[in-house]
Image (cartoon, rainbow, N blue to C red):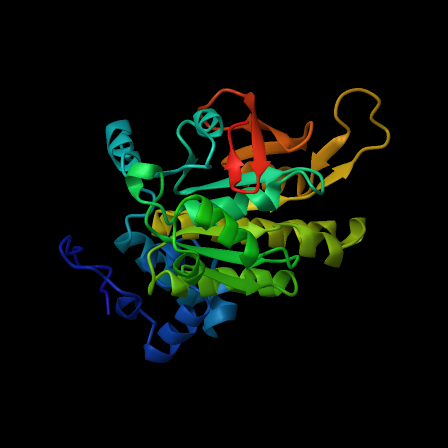
Length: 324
């Protein structure tokens, strides 16, 4: 175990078992609950850790203190170091050059991209296309990786994947084998599936995690103002888990979201995405998808850390997402 009084060995890679108060049984409990490295333990609260591991809060505080010390949590970095790390980010094509330009070259890894809009606006079509595109060679805008699809509304259609794959001259059966689909039956199951996705990413080169849709279960299960706080807390935890998945695996997280109408709004667009500030603050990129004429859709970037707001027109064809 780690002796906090001793100088840290910079060359050693410490594990959960090295922490004071953590034996094999406790380490197994922590891993089963999703705490797989020191950084995750360093940022948990003592109460949560005590409840989870079955230890006293005093012991939990010692475990967290040791994790913080040996995981370098709280250390500052200079801007050039962060710039170097960001050079490792990857971009995934949407299938539309105009759409890619709007997003600064495509969907970014280590980030959550949210697509929200009314029913039939094309959100699910977009994420189906991404599940195919992520398998493309890098020179064609892909990442040569697998996709995970968490399906909350029974929207995944393998037939659509076949159409999109054939349009790109890819083997449809191979493409389908590289998409791992799980149906989420309620909000807690949906959250659990992110942990399962983390395990799956250890076996396969997962570069894309899709949740279609993000808020459907939360919206249906937590109704009324009395349950709003609990809903938002769970949704906040869920989105943090998604972002952690993106960071650890240098992967892209793409989520779809429903909208609600504001009947008392007389000017402007009366629709707004579900989830309020929790979703707004946790999503790195937010795109509003709305219907236009025929097979055309308008994609508007409404929030981004560095890119300007703007919109483009895309087309949803039999072949997939394309420039009109």
